[in-house]
Length: 157
Image: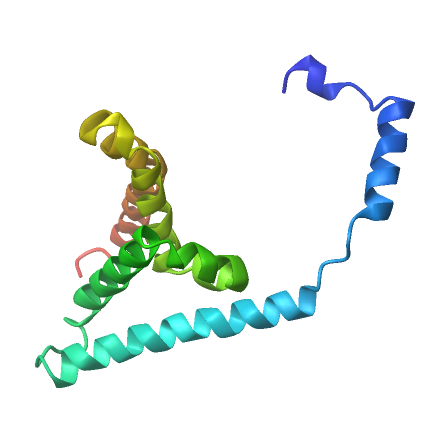
């Protein structure tokens, strides 16, 4: 951390913090938690319905239905983000739609939409993968170490 950020707060800064804290509205935590829980559950119910469609209508196995189910949820989220609907839903539901794969898809689509005026490669491609790059890198690193642990713990399987 730079030395400027390590300085102690001045009396004026402390007084302002007290002033602002006293006037900050209380957040309805129980309500927000309940809404996020229900919204996340509805995303899961939708995902289960899509998965069941692939199993019962398209003849996929339960295992094989997972990938197209995620693809449908991502495509639906990107469509809703492009239409401006997902942001309104997410504003109301909070973490309920931000945590699952829908939140990641929304973040990717939003970054792409914001930078489309800069062109396809340097705008959409570069800015969309600012977020995805970190997720992909840490996903690959985590997969490597999990694979390494699996190999060391259960060799010969």
